[in-house]
Length: 367
Image (cartoon, rainbow, N blue to C red; front, side, top):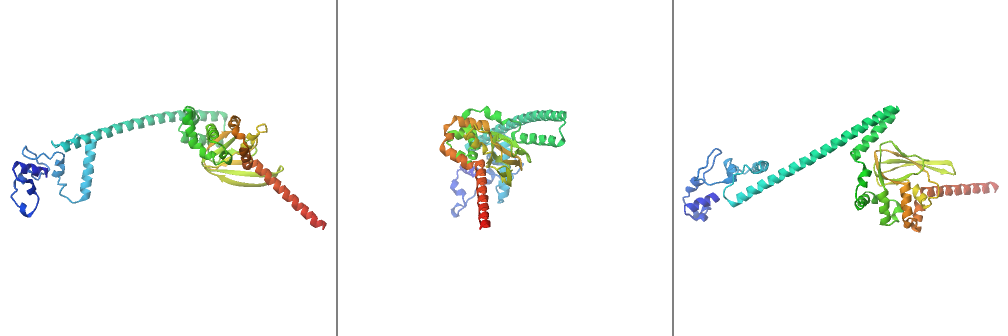
């Protein structure tokens, strides 16, 4: 249309008559000579109109087809070729819109190319760091293998050691989590620990009674621990050294209930992400002068487990620093949630019931 208007202007005709209509039937043969149907191998001379970046589309007659798929595929091919060549293949005419569009394509191509180079550099750098860490890990594995061979460990123990190291490498990629948290500023470390652990802590009824400052102190003392499948996390009768909050995986808890030192019954249940165990420490913290309690349950990992551990010394330190830890409300929560208190209560109820039944039988026999 621009070519027709330019030719009409040169021949001094009214451009409105270029449109079809009853009163617009005239001889416009000059349009065909001024704006010829270009073939693929035609060479423009100075008398032809400069079609600029539209020349290729006119030569292959893509404008004449009504097949939408051909048009959209050609447009996508033209766009990719223009961007990949940074607009060097665009031969624009003197039309302002074409020049600005060609400039825009060239700038976008440069930006995308710069982004590609930057991402490639980051990828190569991360790959180099990963390769370096893998070499360090392989060196540590070789040292561990030599040490296990020197100690003459059986194959079963060697396999467990290898699995543990492989699992820790898979999770941490050679980065020590304690070092990672320790090198961060205090406020950032506190925010990360709150994001990871605050929801887990609030699942414990005792911690629900505590304020945010106390919960932040507890979160800051938590440490991430990893356990492989089928490993025993704690065993019944061992000193309760830590309280664990599970973030991933599943464990089996075997509970033994005793009545005055004699075996009463046994049951088992599974704990998943969001559960916790080791609450025996909560009762001990209320009276640290007492002896460190023992685990009343055996906990075994059914799958690979990730958890946060709260060590007894850290819990005792937090309790000594905050007086709100010893408030009456928290003490009631301690006793309500204590597994030891519940066990005692169950034993006392069973003993009282057995005594009642025994006396009732004696009365019946006497009668």
